[in-house]
Image (cartoon, rainbow, N blue to C red; front, side):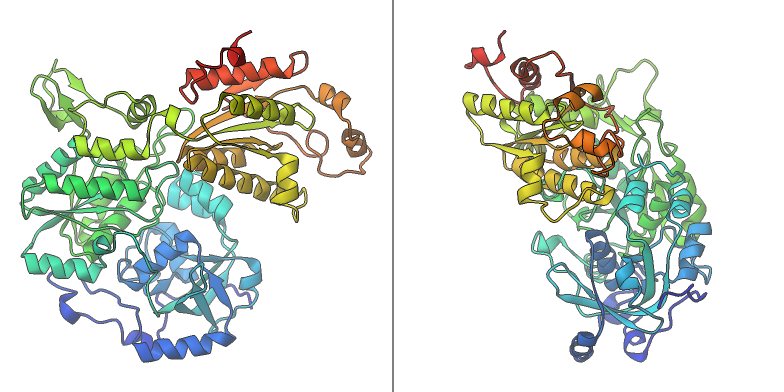
Length: 604
């Protein structure tokens, strides 16, 4: 039953669940942090829940929900004892407070589809399972409601633009119903990677106590660490007379970030560069929202739960950068300002830092505000680093350590050795399929790599035969193409895609998905509508104008022209081979292919 929800600050717990909120057990709590909420039930209760769950509805957790559940179960999200009730959710969105007045900056909610929501009522139980069907927790339903996602975006992220990755996820990938309630945990999500580094809050507290670290400063990161980061963290630890916990996020980060496997290998190497008994590495399974100031407060609460006394907060902490016009979503030190106002509530001390720059004459890194007038400084942006990796050029020794560079080069070889995708988009009968076929033949003729063609009709037949042509189904079809192309690209092959792909936002999703593992080239086949109609051998345009064929791109369904295409081609009066020569020339100029032995392919 769907209800408007119950207004209450905390979720009432039954005896079995309440018994597991254990202050001071096994050294998990003071002096290293406050009381941890432990939601894992005893083995006997877990067996009972598994039996009872046969009669309950189930929900397969999304990747974000798996991260949230893990931090709820292990106490990383203390004092939360479950997914937020409606009253708590509204308080958090409104003024960063739970209904009982406790500081909490970002909603931690369980979003479900309408089918699941309609099977739930207050007091019912919902089995939460991983993608393989393993039951991880039981949720006692306290509220089921349909939130205003646009309002949530404005309040939590401070913007409604879909260019913000957190807003884009909220508006496009979040299910329409929220379910709040207390949790009984059977087991945390299982990980098989870097298991010795995946320490729960209680385990980190125990290690800090065992090592005698009474003051520990945490460093939050979602990027590889280089020399500037090491200098920043060393300075921060010295400044507050503390040891250092390098605590990188290995859950969900910003689309396009370096994968966590590569990053952790880099962290394991750089931690050896610190003096003995001064730095420790542990991994955080957090799904970042990229919410800037509010997320900085969340990071502080989490690190308090992990037993830290201080948190380093740098420039644009947890921010997604800038929009397409170069306007930053948050001020450079807005996160520091917000956390400063809430330090006492959190119980952790912020260590603010400005951007570090390399002073050439002094051969060292210093904060930008400490650079002497006239001094020559150097920086290397993330974009410039990616360019060095793509081109196979040397990365300056002042920027990073050789072992870190080596790890990045293993994952990101030069463009000529990476897989890539050429993604054609355009109106029906614009010439996409013809160009894609000619490009495939020319690349196979040149040799050196496997080439796969994912033409619109081929995909519809073999991958998406059950889908129609509604907007929702078109999006699903393009995402499937993007997923397959990303796998081909990730494994060093060449994917050529030729769907209509009429909607800009889903094309951008595919670009992000593929760019994370290789090259992506968008080709807009911009043949005019009247020419496409003249070429239509199947008569589909005529049927669309008569209303016989519905949701036809260019007639009853709009086509959104891409503003980010690398190549634009009008095939009206240009033969296919000449059009493809332009594409091949672009690929060679940008080091995706070496066609020096195939002069005929690019000449003329």
